[in-house]
Every structure is written in structure tokens, then in C-alpha cells.
Length: 262
Image (tube, rainbow, N blue to C red; front, side, top):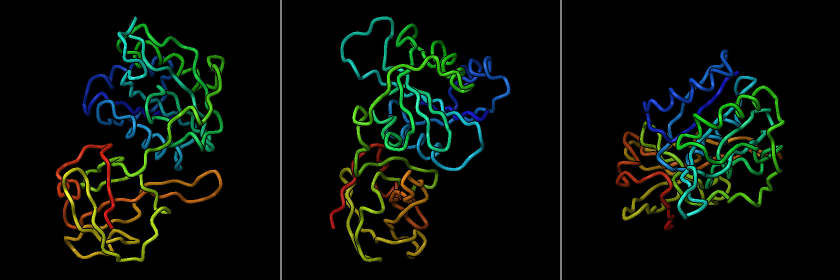
């Protein structure tokens, strides 16, 4: 069993160790890899659920995710209650268990073979991903689906928001929620792009390295997957050859809007 733990605890946060410890109580042979996303950032969470879950990997995989801003109800919380736990089954057999909050399921909702709520308490602890959810996640990982509740309909889950920053990688490349197929421009077209208060010239390219050093490219990136109808989906990236696109745009946050000015 290979488990990817996606959460907004923070890089190096001992919370990861606490959750892994609980998962390993029920799944002692599992290998667990952790991935930290920005605090409360359900867009980044959903992006990585899809990028890792819908692409090839080892057999017998589980993605366990927790990013729960508790924004489903603005009123005071009783017993630390938050968004409910869900289960998704991807076409390649990958199981996904985690909180349905914001955009966490948006990238996979049209690809999933099954989407269900999970019958487990929505409260009981400030740290539900450690204290409440692991037994249900471990059971599902071992094909015990007795905890599944009602089926979820894709239209109950928000769509992926267009023209947003989905992620910034270690090189400063900006991954976006702009689908490559949505861009209809001749290669090497000069455009302008605004993120926040910063506007920069860029060149539309069909491959990031097909631009000179120091040039900002707007090109299909390394992220994407094959959809259930056999199409290849790729997401556009902003790439500054020899530098950092993130720095050029003033270090924008994940989730911030992107505007193509032509």
C-alpha cells in the first residue's frame, strides 16, 4: 500500500508525523509520502489529488487528503465540526479519501468512477485527520466500503476555477488552471499577462524551452493527465527561462487570478 498524504499542515510540521503514526497503526506495511500545500488552499489540494491520482503509479494506492477551512458554515462550530469526509474511486483504481471542501474534488469529479460521502463523525476533534478519520481511511484502503454513505453528484462539487495559479514549483514556474486546449494562438505570439498589479510580456510557445534565455514563456506545462474519454489534458505554465516567473510577478499566492491581455 502506497499512501500520499496531502495536507495544509506546513512543510516539516509534526502534524504529518502524527497522522502518519495513526495510519500506520491500521496499515503497518504502508509507505506514506507527504505533500504540503498552502494553508486552507483547496485549489492546490485538488490539483495535486488529480495530478498524482490520475497519472501512472504503483498499484494499491490511496490518496488521503485534509484541507478543511471549515467555510461550509460561518456560524460558531459545535464540537469542532467541519466539512464531511468523502471517498472517490479513480479509473485506474486509486482510492481518494478526504474532506470535501472548496475545490478539493473539482479536478477529479468528472473522472471518478464513484463519489460518496463517508459515514464518520464531522466533529469530535480539532484534529480530525488524526483523531477521527484514519480508521475509515484505513478500512477503505483495505476495500471495506461499509462506511460509504450517499453518492455525490458532480454538480454538487464546484468546477475548477479558470485562470488561476494552481501551484508554484521549486524553480518558480507558475502552473495554472488554464487548459492548453483553450488557447488558440499561433506559436511565438507575443502577449501580455497580468497577475495582481504586475503586467509582463510573454511569448506563447508550444514548449517552454523554445524561447531565448530571459524570456517569459506561456506554454503547455508538465502537468496534466489522460481523461476518461482518452483525451490528453495539459495545463498551461508560465516559465521564465533562466529565472523565476514567480519572482517576476511579485511572488503571487497560489489561487490568485491570471489575466491574458492579448
